[in-house]
Image (spheres, rainbow, N blue to C red):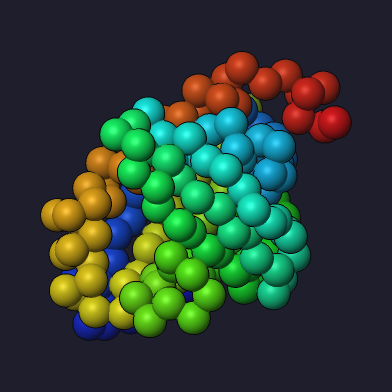
Length: 161
């Protein structure tokens, strides 16, 4: 996704440097056995209903909030370019008119990886609601923090299994 003139008011960009090689960080983000262990903001857990990591495939899951609230989620993978880029659409369900587009960029920085999450909402109002009502910016930072902590506990051998 390229940020075009006029989209800045609909976009959220969050990045984090993860202490781990790009291939390992990419694997932690693309295999359900890893995703299920770190996905979501602090205190959240994830239950996967179905997962097919391929272009056109989908991940259907429920995020369970620390207060017991369940949040249905659906992601379809638009583009997968290992280990550099993933493009996806994320909503509450397939065909959700409020779904948003997201591009994940994995940039090698020696033994570390910078992960940039670029999220583009259909409207400024939907972006603002995600920020104000759902804490999207802080939640995104916490999610990447959980990824960084998870990758820190992985070894190269574990990441290759």
